[in-house]
Image 1 (cartoon, rainbow, N blue to C red):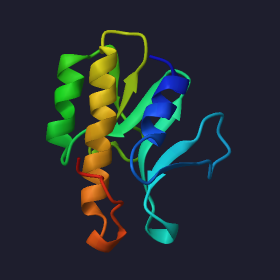
Image 2: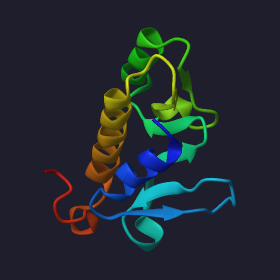
Image 3: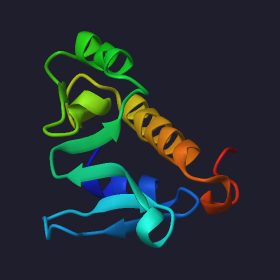
Image 4: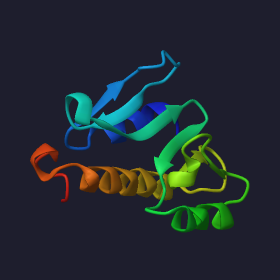
Length: 121
């Protein structure tokens, strides 16, 4: 997995769009519009930050399964966000599934009228 492939996967999600509010090397990927837009993936050269579970306890399963390649994200980790590394022990298909789940968790919290068509397929 690399950041370009992951970004393409994220942007293929209904309503997915890139933003760079902090002028980092790579953007975050959001869903939703305007002030209601929410991040579902933090991209970096070395991995992706995702909403890995509805709770910290659920997200901790990644830490147990992949102790060398999954870590709690700084600042927002208490809310179930993890960093997942590219090129390590996490298979590419599981990285893609983690982004899919992050997207699902984030979109499901948006008001129904702000959810993109086809988000739950």
